[in-house]
Image (cartoon, rainbow, N blue to C red):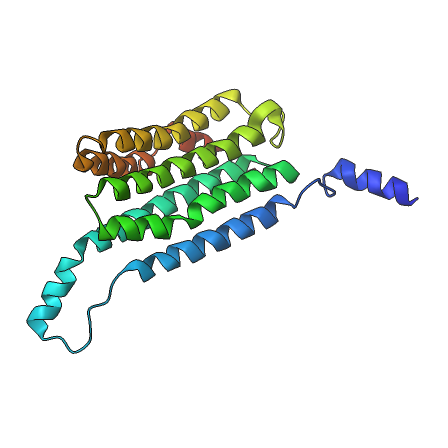
Length: 220
């Protein structure tokens, strides 16, 4: 009887080789919330008891930190939304998938460091390259999550439209490609690199064809 029960659980999808996708999403949400909160700790507070004129000057002097914070916060929001959209189609998990997702979260956890570095040295080639490498690694890790889940319909429904799979892959790949281009241009002029990084924001925020497919299937 016990063996029969285990077989029924396996067939119903309750018994999985890894944690349920709900647990993975909960961990991911927690990491994103923590990292997005920690970002603000990279902002420098002026020393106490400054005259009003000096206080304003001190605040203005830290504008690179504020821009880096705002940019990274939005970037994290973009990746959180992308991960959430992927899990609309991902229906289960396995042990390998758990570690692929943890690799993605590892790159997310590095964002506060690369952001602080860029805020302190906004035009430094090294800082720009470290930040670009962080963006590229995050994009590649998110691509790996989607690739593993959809390869041979491993963790998604068997009838998932291949067009959705390829469309998401192309959209995700833009981030790493632009970030790597930014790293390359940093050897010429870091301002070009920063502009390329900034262009990722409007690209990912604007609605795309994948959003249409997501809305059509959101009632499932």
